[in-house]
Image 1 (cartoon, rainbow, N blue to C red):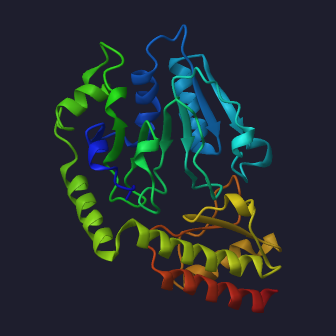
Image 2: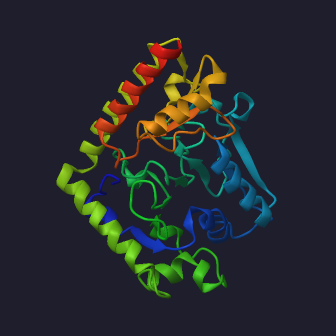
Length: 308
């Protein structure tokens, strides 16, 4: 759960429950915020496949969007530092993807953008750590990682960013959607209901601060198991490592299929890494208990003893 704004801040923020996934927001955000393509632009920080997709969708609509930084040259194994960002102070907004599921990287800082609104795709780490919502123009997230089932997308938007562009199709207009309380048409009611139950569960567990404590503990244990062994390797820069998605490879890559088969037999599934990185990827979202991470570590040690 993002950190709650002050009471006065709530009057400046709208929370929308939309459809179309985060992918629809790749188009809706530039459509709503860029009002004059001839004179306005936007900056995109490229940190992985989803950032690439957001950038590509914006380019379809407005040719003059630009990359403010990219770590593609090192296969997105790190997050560009603040001093590497070449930001345009006249940009309409700056777009970031806070966690990169495929490459296992996560921002260790919030980019400073001055007066330019910061737009964040937080689909894969929302609710996992405190976030000062007041520092962002828009935070958007598909629900299916930490919030609830697929089918609903949460958009947290500053009200001063509503209504910037006229004559948009109603279902793509943030202002029209906000005016009707996300009920311009029938919303995904079941997904919203389950999302509400998840938020109640998080609150009962101790809130987002407790979620962060658990996530730090889980991630630290798994990264330590990788780093303490020469049998396992993590391709991501330590400073940029994700708490949600932990990719790792084997020093003997020819054993990858055997590792995955053995893990499945041990009840550890969906560990195959994305083809861009290879190897394995453990996704340890809020719903993954610490015992699950400990079971993976135990299997890793057993497999290393048998094959090291």
